[in-house]
Image 1: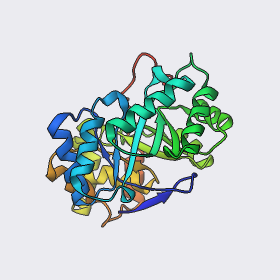
Image 2: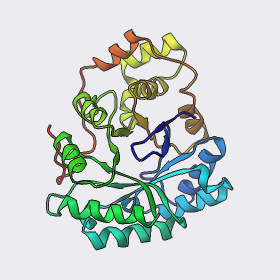
Image 3: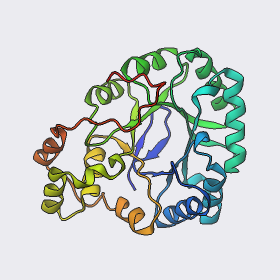
Length: 272
């Protein structure tokens, strides 16, 4: 499993298991199975309402906590200083963990001062409850604001990113500020699997379209957290490190003319 070093100094595996919409036994089993198969990076959030099951899956795997990288997120309505501290403690209790490897602001909130949120994040790091901090669903302007206002490094921006939403300007901004980018919904909820360009390339490299879509992101320097619950898909998503896309193949995917944002709630601040 490949990793990259974050601005905080900690390392994050470039492939993780996304758990949005995974609930109950299905969630617990998926987390356990993924870890047993070699995943080290698990992504969840308070709003997913599955952190207890994620925590049980981690415990059931019997893998040492220090070998895993666990991400969670504080919800947009709870970004006040005291609310952040309270929700992080609740998250740790639900996961039954002593610390998070990464804690993210799930969505920006224009009604709550970002400096207040980031001050709480700093306290969580000082208390060893969080190792790295980051943001999620932040556009270019918000990324720059977060970097300016945070007294400790912003390590990650987690956003929707896939072959049908190639956000080159946002990726460039993050790279210029040494902020890693994590792609959620990296397969566009399955939509890219039917794309003729990805199918053509998958035949060229003897891989599946989903593996090509994930490999494209990895080669762009992006971390990926595809959701998977079956052992077949969990394994399939892991098999992206034994091949490489050519410059032509990368460019063909870069130039796909579809632009489709799948996650765009009323309170979002996306440029498009």
